[in-house]
Image (cartoon, rainbow over the protein chains, first blue to last red):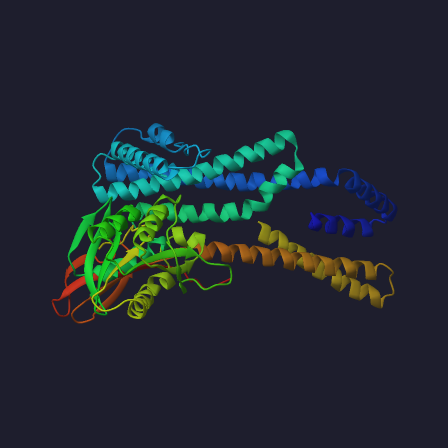
Length: 374
Length: 118
């Protein structure tokens, strides 16, 4: 716009049209006073329509990648698009919270039902896929679903804003749009990682647990979790993670509860390792130490862990590896992968300082274990 | 297209500044006006080119490659290669090429693709 004004001014100077330019300047000044907000609204809508087109492209790309991967792995010959479209609009209605007592177990049940339904649907779409591939495909469909949801929500508010010509509705969306676009771009990276079965940034917890349990015997415990008993600094360490290498987070809350109850509460410490969101300016892969249950999600797993450790008065420690939200769902960066050995040194220091020899400690690697075996 | 347009504006602005300098010697009144327009044009073109450069850099920063690190637990032999579908951390790959020990995948990570230019 400024360039065109510049060209116009330069032409006008040559043809002695000073009066016309002054009149136009006054007119534009009055125009901006009267219709400034409208012009701003049109500019915002114009910017947002560009962003919306980009989101639509990302969503359709993710869908195309999902269909291609499902066909390749599942060796299905039928058209998967209609069935995938149904899955991409899947929703979960959270339990009513007017009377919050017992809501965790209701939520937990609904999440279980959703998880098993989703897995069954993916199995139907890719009948030839093995269990690891089913888990990866489930993650891939979840990624495509998230992108589709972002696109639908942004489109909803864009169209609503355009229809009502509401400046403040559009302004709110425009303010958060850069963050939404960042997340959408990260989700595109995540869908590629899920399609190929590559580890993602969120997998740092399982990576640490996997390094601890390497070369030792493993057993399966509550829902998709593997545990291994290893010796570390003279202590008995029960390292646990979701069963890999398929994309899986398991239910660490149930597993920790099972392990504590198997030993009648004779656990000296529960130490949780997870990826956590860093602040801008902080370095990816830095480690921080704290107290509490380091686990994301809706909160049901955290609730179970907190309940169990409080019941037996077991100290609950946490180690987090810092990364951005985007890095958490994109293929694991070198700085994050290299942090695993430093986390293990910190685990050794913590258990040496806080427990006695021959004590039993639970070390839980929390996160998505895609691309990470045990 | 946008690059060509910005370069054309830059060239036109340079010509305007040159013209302004020449007509200033001849004592023409519009020389100052042309000089101001020329400087404005240069600033606009440079700003547009810088924005374009930033966008290209942002797109390049998003391009990543994923690498797999193979490690022999016995002799410490290490090799890095491109990630292949089916690779996962701690996957056993068979005997080591150097000592016949157990070769396994020690690490899988991504790093940005670095390219020269612009």
